Amino acid sequence: MKNKVTKMTILKMKKKGEKIAAITSYDYLSTKLIDDTGIDCILVGDSLGMVIMGYENTLPVTMEEIIHHLKAVTRARPRAIVVGDMPFMSYQASVEDAVRNAGRLVKEGGAQSVKLEGGERYVPVIEAIVQASIPVVGHLGLTPQSLHEFGGYRVQGKDAESAERLISDAKALEKAGCFAIVLEGIPWQLAQKITGSIEIATIGIGAGPHCDGQVLVIQDMLGIYDEPLPKFVKMYEELGERIRGAVSAYVKDVKDGSFPGMEHSYSADKKKGPSDDPEDEKGNIAR
Image 1: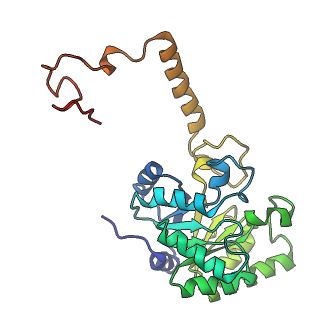
Image 2 (image 1 turned 90 degrees about the horizontal axis):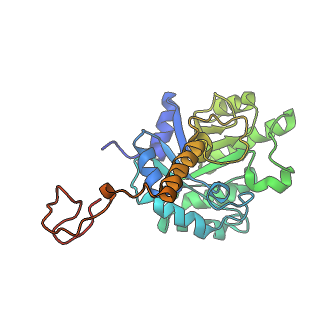
């Protein structure tokens, strides 16, 4: 059993120059498979609103939905550090709300860290959560919960003024106690500059190759999410088509009567032994 990844592991990886691999997961079985790969960080992101719940964006996601999926992920007992997203309006209204909700993600969901979007204005929130002994990951650049403020999903930090603001935000989040920051949808030159200017880890998504690590939504990189993908996604598989093909074959077999066959059926002959029928002596079905 390899050592559990913690916030200290991530900080050591940053210091050593070792790249950090992160991915989203929302269920037990996927997490079991993912964790076998040596992944460092699993994010139970509010992206589940779109790829699991079918929402148009991440804004409708609730604390209960994040906690529900966190429970499923953490039951797999992954080696990777599990980070739970703080959904829209779970931390914006007050510091007290933020600490209480961050605590729920840890206490009820089993998260080992929480992630929240926003820059310097959320320093008091981050400081209070860190004071409650909960590790925090920040999120700068294209922050999806600010969709309406940005007027859509737009690359951030393209001009000098906004770039300097993001650099300042990153330094403020580091000072507030974050151990990592997700950098989303910003020019690679800016991501490189931010990464070199702070001692905590940067995790890029659409921020170029110079971040300390990368994160992708698993449905995107496996080709399951049936929507146009942004430029920054590399699709490693086209499982969507393979799933359609497999289920289509199953439908055909059921319709034409070729499934189930006798090899998939149980016998009434109780003299048959366990080697002939996948049942124990009490008739329980073996898996």
